Length: 161
Image: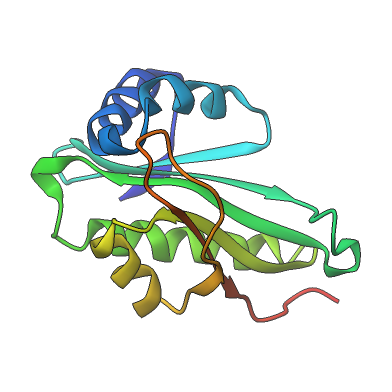
C-alpha cells in the first residue's frame, strides 16, 4: 500500500535516504529540507504489517525555459530500504509517481516527469529505462561523491487542454 507520508515518517525517511544514498552525498541532511518544502509531496510504501519499505518525493514546477509547456513533475527521490530491495517495490513506487503526475495533469498541464540518477546507479537506470524514461541530459552535474548526475524524462500523455 502506498500512502501519503505524515510527520511520523520523517525520521525514517531521513534515515533510509542517508543509508540508500550514502555514496551520493549526505541525503540525511538534504532530504529533510525537501520534506519541509510545501511544493513537495511525499509518499510511503508499506507492507501488510504496516512496515515502511520505501518512499518517493515528487514536486511540480514550471520550466523557466519552456513556460508554454505547463508543469513538469520532478521525482526528487525514490528509495527502498535495503532489506526490501529487488522485490518490485521501487517499480511500484515509480508507477505511483507516474500515475500521480498523470492525475495532476487532469487539473493542470503536466507534460513530463523528470528525475536525476547517478551514472553509477545501474540498477535504477535500468528500471527507469524499462519504465519509458530517456536521457535528457547526460551531464546534469555531479553528486557530492563525484558521480556524474544524469537527468532523465518521460513524456506523459496529455490529459489537460
